[in-house]
Length: 146
Image (cartoon, rainbow, N blue to C red; front, top):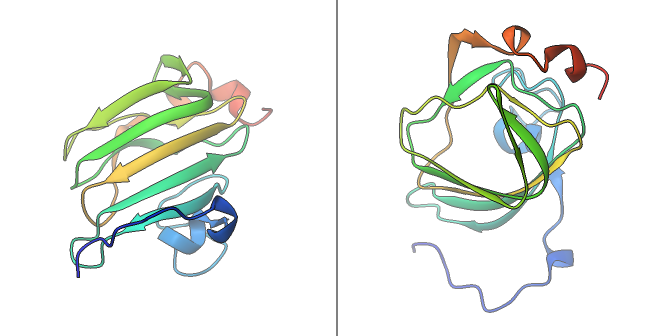
């Protein structure tokens, strides 16, 4: 069955869990994605046939990725609260983003923390652009102290 209908589920019935558990190897380490800190995620909707997924993701202050990243699926993000740097561009919520497959975005950094609504059109994967690294960004000195 494709993504089932949702006729109203209280958020309290959808527990927060570590993004490391969702995208890592079931551990608290997220080495495959190379996140420097872990966010938490609530999976709102999941399609086992296509891998499409809608989630709420919270990232703590100081969270950042190691480099710009791209995915093989279409990704839509709404920054509901907080802030985020994508490369050298700073955004505050609410702000909408859409990334077609293969589009590099980031590296990413949140100074205050961020709450996102994220939709993926298929299974999540990540590919990094090693030429666009976090340590080369103007915000890098603040990343460790946020």
